[in-house]
Length: 230
Image 1 (cartoon, rainbow, N blue to C red):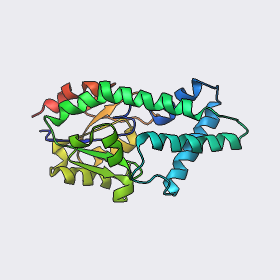
Image 2 (image 1 turned 60 degrees about the vertical axis):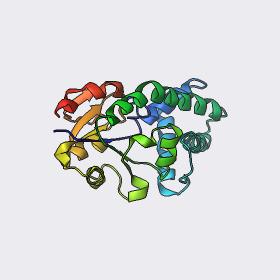
Image 3 (image 1 turned 135 degrees about the vertical axis):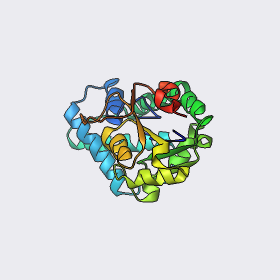
Image 4 (image 1 turned 120 degrees about the horizontal axis):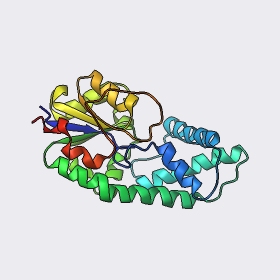
């Protein structure tokens, strides 16, 4: 019997299973051809830099977070001899796509789910998730937010999912985890006893998993069978 929901943010709520490397790659392609291997290195460089340094503060919006990442990516590209000056174009493209997706797909889906289930967000983020949720009008839909930078535990550590289950006040088998990453969402959530729904689309890796359900869009989740068990 499903009584509560754990859900990821990046790649799950802000897009339909599209990894952010792929989202940035699409944004860059609008204005300039970019070697994929170098762009991937730029993406990894930016993520690692943000992970090692407290650059993003709790007041950063999602838009400002994206802007910070693009600036770091550009620094890396420039160091490799690739001149890129259209940062604002990439930012506008990526941010507007997220806004439209949340307004038309994930926002309405979360509204429907929140009418039936308590929800807790479980995410690897930078300590500004409450600001981001307010930015998109989503904060009221969640009972709690379990954010890696705040709790000191990152996916795929199963402990972060145990914290999510505890925040719901339920048993693991009474919850379902919804996420886009097989290795960071589905497999570790299953390891603590949660049901799972895999938002499968453009993954970062080729790791496979065996979720209770698969879906191509968060928009269909309110109607999937695993959530009808109650």
